[in-house]
Image (cartoon, rainbow, N blue to C red):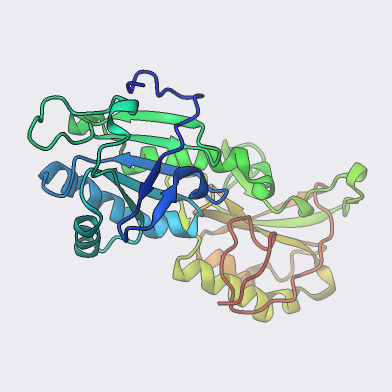
Length: 315
């Protein structure tokens, strides 16, 4: 099965290989319901592979908080992979095909290197069921995916597989309904009579978001965490009975694009803690339903959905 046959929409073969600790692994057991970047590497000895794996290490924090996986396959022995992984500071899994059992069936051998007989460098982004979303041939370095391409692939797969991704809302700084940015929102906030969510008429929305396509902050960034802590600690109490609902606005599973607070009066909006990140715009709206504020805890871990939807996990 050459790389030309490993195309989007096809199911990737279910590899069975030892990991860097020598434990037997099966590829289908590894995603755990998450999207996956599966990378085939020549081995530790290649400067190009060292460079690319350092790039993956840069991405691993982001993948972890966004519930995505990185796996690297090479012909290095497990003990060599373990040492290489430690030197890189990598936490993602390495699989060893030192016996080259899958090299032939996949038809991914790099034929120009008859000394090492390594894998041809390539990357596949996979859905949790191992269906290929995208394939990148990396014999030439510029054929490999960039960090942004990997982010976008993970974003697209996550949107398809996460039922809690949330309804899309078009948001912008001056006209949050029509400036072209699309955000995920806690779907409980959106009025839907068929689902029993009755609109609060004549409410006011404080939209703390920017129309700038580059305006984004990681959900786990200190300023976003602090704004959410402030919301739980005092912002909900400050709004009191005027509160209709509140939701962060997600660009994807990793990035915060803003927040929206909906209230029966706009009197308290000057104190909105989310306005410290992006300035707010006030709009009159009939589009939102009342949602009770979450009970906490004040310190929590982001759950991958527009906050406060999803489950809480104490920090």
